[in-house]
Image (cartoon, rainbow, N blue to C red):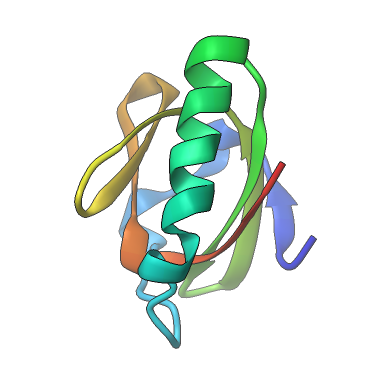
Length: 88
């Protein structure tokens, strides 16, 4: 795990900032797999993203992936350019 572990409900969207490098394209296959795992198998993924307080990791179900965002339950959207890693 790369970042401090937090609960999904603790994600403060206004504190999410872009990662030092944009990993969107290299994570594209993992993003699609995480979405499929979440929707078809109700499995969770470890999502590490950048905030102004440092890297944070949340273990949760991915609901959808758009061109610019990763959507979690309860309408939480994480910008793809803030992602550091995804593991499942």
